Image (cartoon, rainbow, N blue to C red):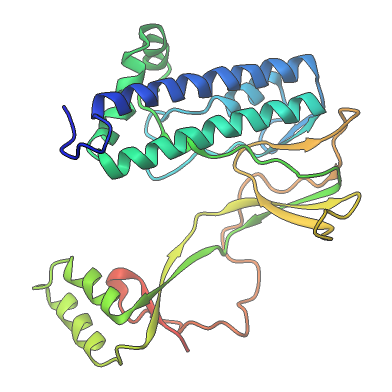
Length: 293
């Protein structure tokens, strides 16, 4: 299998490069875990008290789909790790390997998109011992996003960490009328509900901006309060933490932190913003498009 564009790398070479990138990811993850064992600090995790070495290792090596896991969903390992300087350096090395893996995946999506499905199963088969272990554990496919998502780190010493579920997240993308029309036309343009939405769209001015909204899954967010201001003068920072948050700690002690509920609340806890700029009901429900007020 080769690509038609002579300026692009052949698919077999991309696959070999990705295998090497994955091996680098595993190797640096092993080095991080070993470094933490030699430079121990306190651990805290949301779902297991007390936190154990095995919890941290499982979180660091969670690169595979579990049996029955929705392909659109990434697993979560909420926790805090008190990281001595050597451990923070090891985390940076892992995150660099993750970034390299992500860049290669982006190249493959552009140059050889048909390889993506093959990637999820080919890597374990190239490592027979790994494949046998994964199959017995109910894991046999690579979860690409869980490979490249970065391990969160605090940029400076933290005085206090306040963790809370964030359940009102939305991704908002601005669209032109022409963009929305193209998206509707890509659906079944003969369907009655699509024709009705195209008619609504035709009544708008071409210069009007619209908003496509995607509701995001609940996520744990850590609000970090620093001992000293950062170089930009900020004294606090918020981070989403689906993986353990590594916090710099010379003495291996965790900062003061709270203990949130293990499950997100069932409904929105905060009041709707009084200055919300989007209309309450979607203009084009088939593509989740709203008008601005």
